[in-house]
Amino acid sequence: MNGAMMFMSKANRLDEILQVTGFSKAHLARIAEVSPQAVNNWFKRGEMGKDSAIKISAATQLPLSWLLGEDEDLISVVTPPNSMPDHGSAMSPQPSEADVIGEMRDGLIPVIGDAVLGMDGLIDMMEFHAGWLRIYSDDKSAYGVRVRGDSMWPRIQSGEFVVIEPGTKVAPGDEVFIRTKDGHNMIKILNYNRTGDYQFTSINNDHKPFTLTPDQVDKIHFVSGIIKATRFISADDVAKE
Image (tube, rainbow, N blue to C red; front, side, top):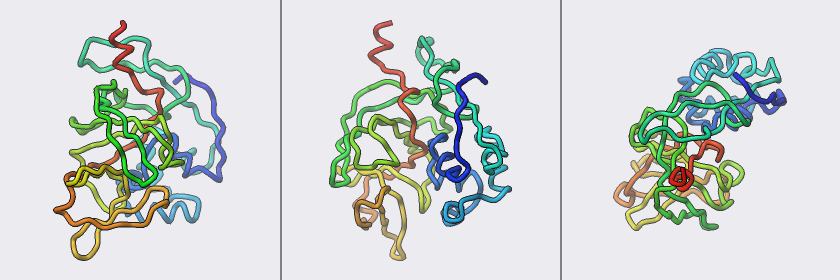
């Protein structure tokens, strides 16, 4: 696997795992087959258990020793290829600049537009065919949106892409894309209360939690990852070729 060597500190290893995979804490919990609270406890004490690390290593191909903080060096790989294949075919990764770490399956996910973040926590969706993300998803209906704005910084930065999987079942602690019946769009963390209503909390704790009844919600889609712009293939660039 070719690429530049990156040096990462042992103290921030769990945060680095989120950064290099684009996973949420809830996604790590699914992979490790533990509760979201267990993952929160990893971050409190600064390390995960070996059994969980083995499962995450198997799913991501990240070295076990690096996940456990025993090694500080990691090699990073792949940027988008120089040319598009025939429409609808999978793409072959070409090693280049640092971006995503670990072996990834080939695939294309359509980017359906821009999510413009407002200061009130709402998202103005500008829907158009922007291009593709070169990343695999088990959900054939998966799509991506490009984030514009800084209201969810530092978890999601302006210019990054959010991968959304409508077919993936959501659970408490998941990051989700919400559309209400009155047309408001948001990305929040999902919780439930005892009455069966949905409670949502802010990703960066800038806004108070709020509750919606099921009949106020149009859709709740699972947010599976946050992807760097280096994996984006512009539809405009493809049209020029």
